[in-house]
Length: 169
Image (cartoon, rainbow, N blue to C red; front, side, top):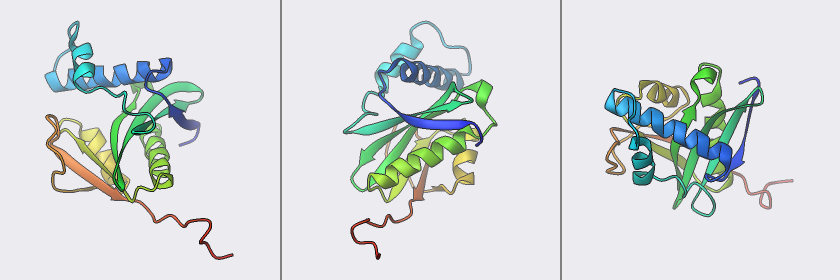
């Protein structure tokens, strides 16, 4: 994961908006099996907006590789857990540890926010994503939602956080 840095951003921030649009364009292309046509990415973004990936409902994390904007991942806060979404690494930065860097970052943020686990759904055609999640300790679970594109569901338990005030000294 050398050369990777991560940090929070708002979905409307210019860098975040670029990455979220690239993510959705790739999802549209892969779902349809062809290049996207004018308006299809806008329609997909309207169907599945990411503006809730900001406090108080969520969090968006951007990744940079060697200083270059390289990827993103989002969390939505649920009671006691977090939902992972919008995991994306730009093609030029793939196979360089970006997925691992993003997962480590969102897991830390989720744990710090009090989540005891992270859940996600994904599609069958996203084989690389499913392999990434499995490599990092996510296990397939029964469906926990009925999303229109959800075909596989994963969960990872997060380590218990020790409250600093209650920690032995």
